[in-house]
Amino acid sequence: MSSILELQNISKNYGSSVVLKDINLSIENNEFFTILGSSGSGKSTLLRIIGGFVKPSGGDLIFNSKVINEEPIFKRPFNTVFQDYALFPNMNVYNNIGFGLKIRKLDPKTITDKVEEVLSIVGLNDFKKRMPHELSGGQQQRVALARAIVCEPKVILLDEPLGALDAELRKQMQLFLKDIQKKIKTTFVFITHDQEEAIFLSDRIAVLNNHQFEQVGSPKELYYNPKSKYLASFFGECNLIDGTVDHINSDIITINTAFGKINVKNKYKNISQNQNVTFAIRPEQIFLNQNKDNNSFSTKVDRVEFKGAVTNIILNFPKNIKIKVQINNAEEQIAINENDQFNIYFDPNFGNLFVND
Amino acid sequence: MTNIINYFQSSIWTIVSFIMVTIIILIPLLSFLSYSFFTVDNVEIIHEFSLYNFKEFLTGEIYIPTFFRTLLLALTVMIACMITGYPIAYFLAMYAHRSKYFILLILIIPLFMSYIIKIYMMRSILGYSGLINKLLMMFGIISEPSEFFLYNQNAVIITLIIILLPLIIIPTFTSLEKIPRNIIEATYDIGCKPFQSFRYVIFPISLPGLIVGAVFVFILALGDFVTPQLVGGTSGFTYGKIIYSNFGMAFNWPFGTALASILLIVSVIIILLTNYLTRKT
Image: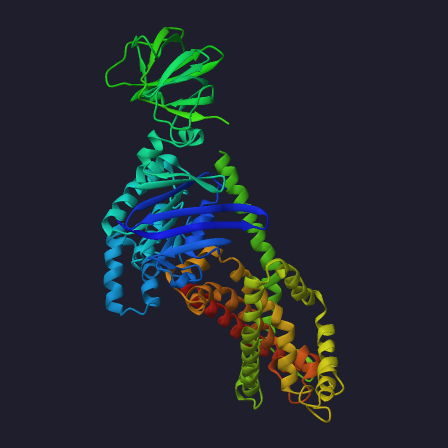
């Protein structure tokens, strides 16, 4: 794989308010790359900089080893799928899709063939004579996508394209997007604020927080090895337990917490004695009813949340610390009730330590 | 039960509004139009059905040529308004950002002014010792005042363009302003150069607004009789002025009504036709 699109020290500010600060990124050819951030994090601005709708205040945008900062929008080999679709209201589905090819002055026969092909990819053959306002949200979305892919761009930019759809349709469209990306083998740069969506769709994810990338990596890297406390709780649920470093040896770090000592596997270089740290562990990484010498704690159940496939058990620890444990409901569990006494076990191989300032 | 009451109430309002329209508009209009089938003897109206007036229109020497000359005049005014009004509306909607509503307000203010005052104002601008002549002489373009601008067809056209221009700018501006930003961005994204973006997307979307304005201008220019009266002189004779003189000077109401009915029918046909055409595109 080789990098198709590179961002070097891209920054953007409007007057004195900073939107993006020193963004560095390298997007590989044919990957499904997601930029994930909460609203107002500057993710749309970043996409608009790549698309050419916004000029960066500083830095370079490099496409296939060529700086394209000054390239006008219509010359960039990218196409955008806009958040609210932005279909041309004066053209029917067929003409919306064929418009880009018409502008490129392809002969009518080729245009017809390509449009028909793309129509069948997005499954809209029966709708080609419809006007945009006669389509449902999901269908408009497909037209917007078809309009982008028919021009065979090198990169497709998607600006929260699923944001306006209801949950059920959203799931369908996610599957659909993933399939299409595999089928047409094109680089997708996707923007969303939805972590689950990002994890499901992406080859790699970049998390935008405070105008900068917090971490860039595969969904698994981000889930199991988040670089910060923020990320640990941003992706899925996470128990955060504060403590101080008691002692360190070559393979184990022991920390003092409000309810006792916890041993964690030492994979850190920046942690020293007596430092304030936070131990982050996911609910499904904690084990119930395993009595071991170390890392085992006994406490009362505060609440039980049955969720079908899994059950969440919230345990009460001293100093009002609540710890969530998730158990798999493969078979019907023995009844767990509030105020039952329970044992939990932290496997030293699981969880991450973060140094607090 | 409530459904029945609701239905009853809504149908009562339908009937009331229908009656209102009939009393206020339809009855006066029909009674007016009925005059076109009467004739005049000296100054006495003879209330007997006759097609004399329509025959007069078709056979009279001046009526049909004047009618077509007026159609051409209205068409000229309309096209001139479209050509000047569209760019104004376009730049206002696309580039004037914060000041656009202020500029629009300035354009609308003349609509609240008296029509007669506006025409007199135009007369003072276009006249023999008016603003235009003075400016042209000041810059040495002409050595003595030109009569090109007043008491002829040119004066009528120029005056009508100036007076009717806001009527084309406002609907065009509205339809241009409604175009979402990202649709314009999408045209560039798809590969359009600025002109192509305009030609294939922006212009077609704004066309209905332009057409509505153009129809307004055309109909008003077609029926106008005050402008030719005040700035048209003898050569600026229009169909509207003939109708006016039949009522005001010749006291031939039936014939004036017949001429007016013909104008009304042509106007309605034009409105229906453009309505049909805009719906088709």
